Length: 119
Image 1 (cartoon, one colour):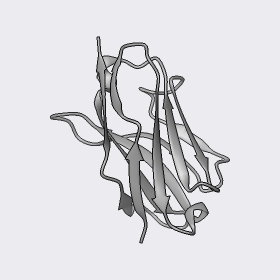
Image 2 (image 1 turned 120 degrees about the vertical axis):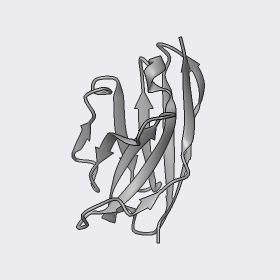
Image 3 (image 1 turned 60 degrees about the vertical axis):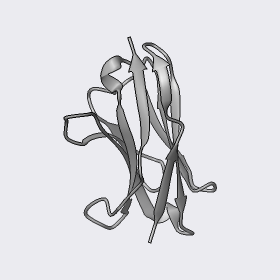
C-alpha cells in the first residue's frame, strides 16, 4: 500500500512559477514510476507528466512541454512538478499517482492539490 500526499498548490498569476511536491509513504519508493495528472472543473482527468522509477526518463503532455519539469528524490520518497510560465488554462486540481515499475497502470493516487492561475 502506498499513500501519496500532494502539497504546494495555490493561487498565482499568469507567468508565475509553482512547485508541487508529492510525498510517498513507502519504503520501496524506487520501485514505482510516478505520474502527475490534473483535473479541471467540467473536464476529465488528464495526464501531465511522468517519471520512471530511477528518474532517468520522463515524458510530458504537449500542453506543458517546455514549461513543466518532473523530478524525484528517491532518498526523500518525493516527486516534484516544477511549473513555470503558468497559464490560466493550467488551473486544475493536480494529482500524483504511483505505478509499480513492472505494472500496467497507476494503482495509487493522492488527494490532489489545487492550482489556480489568474490572468
